[in-house]
Figure (cartoon, rainbow, N blue to C red):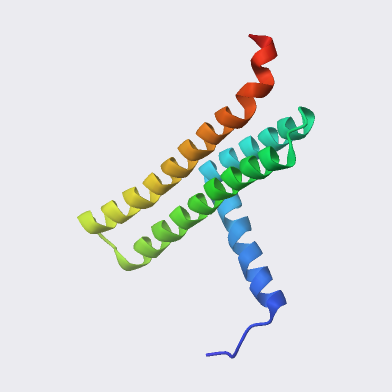
Length: 121
């Protein structure tokens, strides 16, 4: 086993993991596309720094959950060759974490954005 990795190597490995998720996971692409649109809207309507931070945090939480979901799926796939109810449950729980993060982001979005669009009502 190798000694300690440099900061650069650790960063490159982390970036490779992000790229892998983006290249192979359809939902990661969907979440990232939505994030870009929401961030553009955030800048366009001039959110305050606090509002922008809340939106940015919610987006980050969804992306992290999606990446952890992928990690759980890949880890389970390494160790389980055939159907196993525990493996299925682990994958469902990880997917549920993404669902909770996405619901959190949606609710945060409503709380932050609705006051800015009240003039349209």
